[in-house]
Structure formats: structure tokens, C-alpha cells
Length: 158
Image 1 (cartoon, one colour):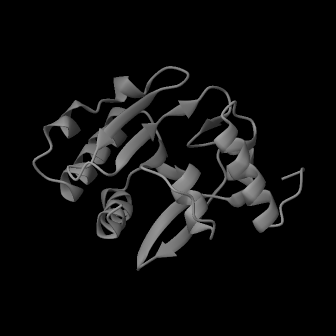
Image 2 (tube, helix red, strand yellow; image 1 turned 60 degrees about the vertical axis):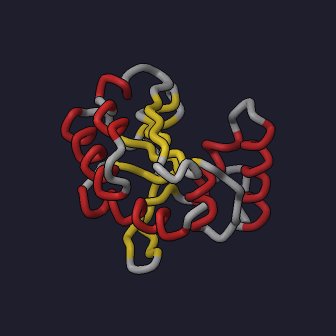
């Protein structure tokens, strides 16, 4: 994965004032547990203003990508609404997630600000990531939850 692209993408939500929380593997990495991933997952608010800010941020990070214009707030409605965009390099996907059923929305996930190479990133807390990963049917997510619990000294109440 192109680290420069990742930093540009992490900078974009702050510049565009996107309402988001970084979740899953990239967020876990910012807490010191490196996980292999091809996707950067952003829990986002599903409204047209935020969708326009998302499009502006993606235009700024990878120009000449006409698929950016296809991202709409309508795509982010429903219980498990996800819009996916691929960077032109083909090695990084952006999953824009409005909500995960009743489990998570941008408003309900606890987050904190992290500094990454002079970029302020809104990232889910370790406890929030533990809860998001621990209750999924995918074995890899449950493994990530165990790694978070063990490495960050979380307890079951977290």
C-alpha cells in the first residue's frame, strides 16, 4: 500500500470537514497494532452535504477518477450501506459506511483524535474497535478483537 497515498487520504477528511470516524484495520494500526488491509474504512454521516465533502476530498487525493462523482448520500442509506471507491493505483479501497445495522453510526462510535504525520485523524477508540470487531461473524474480525484486547489491555466491559 502506498504510504503517501494513505497520508493524503487521512489529510483529506480534515481539510474537507468530513463527518467521519476511521474504523477497523487502519484505525487499529493507528493504535499500534498493524493489520494487513487493502481498505480504509470510514464510518460517515449519510447526508448530501457530507457526501459532497467526501467527493471533494477524494477528488483532491486522486484526480481524474470519474467514479468519485457516483458517490451519493442515497448510496449510504439502509442498514448496511457502503459505498466503495478504489484509488487509481488499484491498491487501496475506501469503504464509506453510513451504519452497521444497529451496531454503529458515526454518532454512536466513541472516537478520539490521533496525530499522524501532522494530520489530525478522528479514529475509533480501542474499546470501540473491540466492540465492532468482537461481534461480527467473520473469524478475522474476531481475531482482530482478541489482538486489541491483549495488546491494549482491554477487559470484557470495554
